Image 1: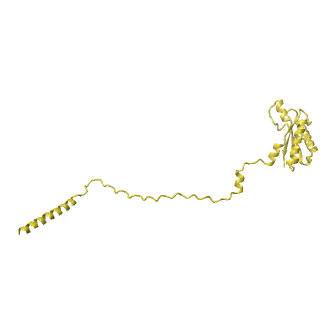
Image 2: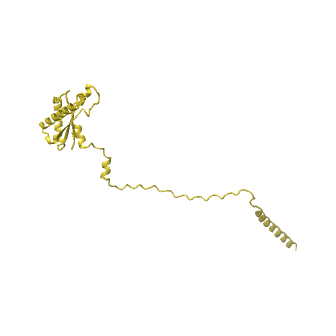
Image 3: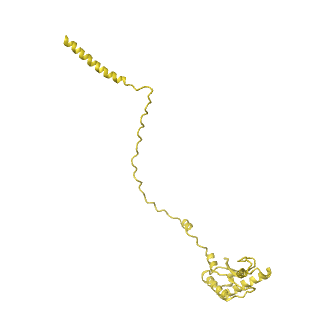
Length: 194
């Protein structure tokens, strides 16, 4: 009988210990009013390391001829080049006689017209300085242009390719009123018209 009581006591104590342990667990409750800890954000998935983009060679693309022409430096037009190579000639005061330097220039101009600009038509423009009347200067400018035309024809340039016009004192090369400016204005210019 004593052994049974002793066993019951041991069993009761064991049950109390087990119940006490469980009670302690139940006693641990989260405190009310305590800040709720936000759950940790779910880790964002890390993308797999990107494989370096493989550089593919560009496919050859046809280059249009128009684009190439647009990027190419502009070459002066043929007529502009020829005009630049046709030199003007100058005259003494109140004269339409061709000086030796003027004849030399006309010779070079004739070479250009016979070898490089074989089909170009040229206008010979006679000019004068500001002295003299309009009528006088128009007549003198025409005589200067005609003298240059005749000389070019003797050098072999076809007369049909040459025309003559006089501007008198209307288009001065230098607008100053000095002897130097007047010397520049007494001239014949060669302009390609076609």
